[in-house]
Structures are given as C-alpha cells and as structure tokens.
Image (cartoon, rainbow, N blue to C red; front, side):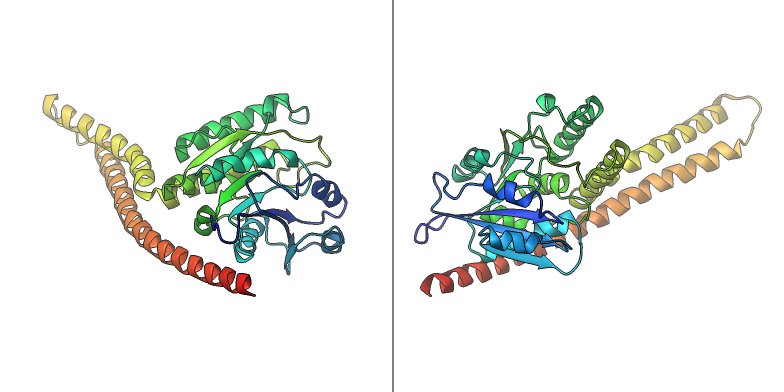
Length: 327
C-alpha cells in the first residue's frame, strides 16, 4: 500500500445490458470502508446496447470503460483490472452487476487483503440459497472440490465472482479463456505463489436468471474445459505425466503379458496384435511425457516473460500514479 497517497479501493462491475439492475447494485455498494482512504466505482461496459453507460454516469460511477463489442466476461474482468490499476487502486473488488452479492460484505472481503493476503474469494451460503436447485448445489460442491485439488487452495466456492485482489495480484493475473475467470485465476494464483483465502459473504435475492450458465450440462462442460486447460497451462509436466501414464501402463501390461507367454509356452505364437498395440501405447505415453517436458520449458519462459511484464506494468502504473498525485 502507498501510505503517502492513502489506500485506494476500486470496486469494478463488468456489465452487459444492465440498465435495469445496475441502480440497485450501485445503491448496495459502500463509499466508505474501514481501513481504506478512497473508494471509487468502475463499470466495464462489455458492448452493451442499452443505457448501461448512461445510467452508470448518472449514478456517479467514477470510471467507465467500454468494449466496442461483446468480448465476454473474462475479457471484461481483465479490462477492469487494468483500468483499476491505472486509476491507482491498491485493492480491487470485483462484483456482479445483477446485485447477487451483498455490498455490505465488502469490508469483510478486503480485510484479509489489508492483513497481507493477495486474493480473497467471497464464499456464498450455497446450501441456504433458495435460487439454487439441488442439482446446482451438488455441481457447485463438486466443482469447488475439484478446483481445490487442482489449485491447491482451500476455497469453498470456486465459482464466486465476488473477489478482492491486492495490487500485486491484479498486476499478475491473466486469463486465457473467454468463458469465465473464476476457476482459472485460482489455478494461476497457486502457480504464482499468491496467498488465497476465502471469507463467508451474504447474497441478495435473485434479480434475473444467470446469463453465464444456460444449463447444468453447459456449466459442467465449460468448467471441465477450463480446469483441464488451466492445469495444462500452469502445470504442463504434471499434466502430461498423468495423461501419459495411462497409455504407458496399458502398453507395458500388454508387453509384459506377451513376454510372459513367449517364455512359458511350449508352442510359440507370435501374437502380433498384442505386441504391436503394446509397443504403440508405450511409445504414445513416452511421447506425451516429452510434450510435457517441452511444455514445462515453455512455461518457464512464459514465467520469465510474465515477471518482466509485471515489472513493466508496475513501473508504468506507479509513474502514472505519482504524476496524478503531483497534479
């Protein structure tokens, strides 16, 4: 935190055609938070075709940034982080425009950041949320368990978009998927060595159906794709080691069986299908390990480039902040 300028909190809200729900969301947000000197609001317009931008300005939003077209929630989230950092944020809170999350929980959400955490996830009372069906509750529990195993965190609501980020975490985060950022950023946070924790939060009654999740099957499919892709990106050697074990072990089992029968049988039988299949599967497993090794080398290069990017961004944002402070 920068003591000379005080601690600034920027609350960002990605929006797509939210003129109806945005007033209620903004009315729920605080303008004063304990431990923070300045609180500002930021709206990211992801190609809205209604009066979202006009409503935001009319209601006193401090910063509005717009995409020319709809680029997806993940892109809007990243645009918000960049805009918040450019505005001099020490802490960034992300919330949804449909007023799902109770804005009065923001002081609880940022308290771990003030104490030294890098990322804080607002954990919803999923079991007590009447809008969630039994199937959705089970999917949320299962999905969060899988993400905990992949990300090495203890977060109990991996899909929650109510989050707080330190300045350093906001500088480091990148999202490669277009669908969402929630699960991927958790995997990345662990790979980056960021300190992640969760706090219980409250939710408001549902104002509209979710636009991100059209069906349970779509949620499962896209979440699985995100988790697998994230693990392959940030832990390529471990990912391909596990994937390569399957064909390698099957191939070795076929080769050992072929060799055992060759040694003990009185009448020789070539059993070429087993021999060929065993050899092919073994080679495929080894090739996958080679891909994992090459991916790990590429990941090391990416980490070096990411560190250089973080240093450059930090320098640029700090210089801009100092200039704005002098002005």
